[in-house]
Image (cartoon, rainbow, N blue to C red; front, top):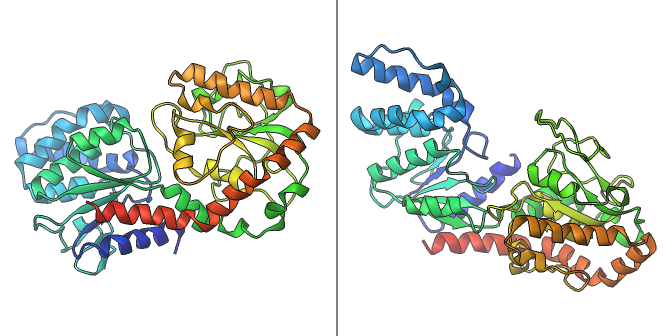
Length: 409
């Protein structure tokens, strides 16, 4: 089985320890709502409305555009949901276009598409539905058509729906709560990285004998994909003092018109599960690791990026929402307030917080490599604590968080 399949079974085991009957819902790629896949059914819904109403308007071409469809589809969507065979349409348009559902019901796995099977979702009130969304941040406005469909589904079936997620201080979670969709938070990426992605690095000498690795660069800042906050941050740095990457255009075709020169130190493969350790590279010979998360200001959502410096015994700063360091410390990790000012974690203004982080990076860049070797020795106990804690304690902590979240519903 693949990694996500293992974790899906683990989640299923935890839910089934509390509930006999439930629905476990996940997306076809195990990650998030797929608008392109949904659009395959979009025109079917439109033509269905025309057929049953006698209308013959042409399908607007703009409806083929995903973002435009988000604003215009609900009219058709709600019409077909409420006027014609509600249960069938809920299954077809909430299940069908969104994903293949994997359902656990009355002690058996149903690896089937419910719209292609005689199996149906449980209609008995009280059977909960668990929606797995822990690997990517939730964006209600972007995926409004999906979440509004869940709301319709929940109201019709009169069953509680719970979304499993891994974000904190999130407007989107509050919005789902307003819709009556409840939530279960657990630090899924920490579990994923410790038990699967980075498990095999635990005993490698290149990783454990970190003091023998030279420090060739004061800091490293990887930017495979362009984001506004990432380029803004690079513009604040003395780039000659560290090591960074910036592709222009990036692999998604986005372009940047600012003053930061293109720079590349690796092959930029999108492989979250890999850390380069078979030779000396900027990844493992840098002192300070700049964790430049995908989500910047609106919520805390850590991915594998923060665990790479922890595995490599590197100190780090975090570009993310206020409270990100406090979030890590709440799980038992230690940070680096004894060596630089971490009050940036409390700064609400994004520009001021970014500047405070840039000041730390530039101060590190101004030090000699010998000074950084000495600093690494001074913080050895923190680096080694984080490494041991990540491997020895984090899986149990995260699984217990999930277990308690389910038990306390």
